[in-house]
Length: 167
Image 1 (cartoon, rainbow, N blue to C red):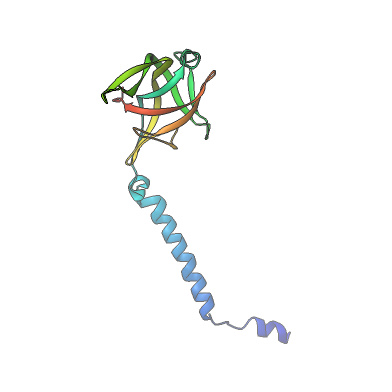
Image 2 (cartoon, rainbow, N blue to C red):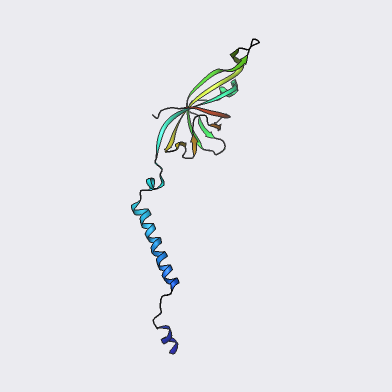
């Protein structure tokens, strides 16, 4: 019975109890501010929207077998990440030209026989963030960027030459 009387006595709060109570209220306060009052996009400093646009890539110095392996409506993927990059909408095949020096020192553009330059127009849905366009939300799309791409029949390196206005 004496033990019960001792344990029922009024206990005082010590400093550790006070710190724990303050920490619990602080965590609850931060959670309420984060989820109830702050706009998530403005809080992160990021605005984003999905847009359909077209971009143009070039593949230089390829043989006819590679140039003719591209087809309209083929799906294009980034080989390293496996990210979907879009669908081919237009294909333009031109003879590959290289800069040559003539015997008199003059620069001329000469066709390289059997080699081609391929321009692909690719349509894709991109995420438009403050820092640029991102394919599938992760792959940064910038002019002069190079990518290892894969289609159903081709694996090659492309270089982005143009990002066209959104549709």
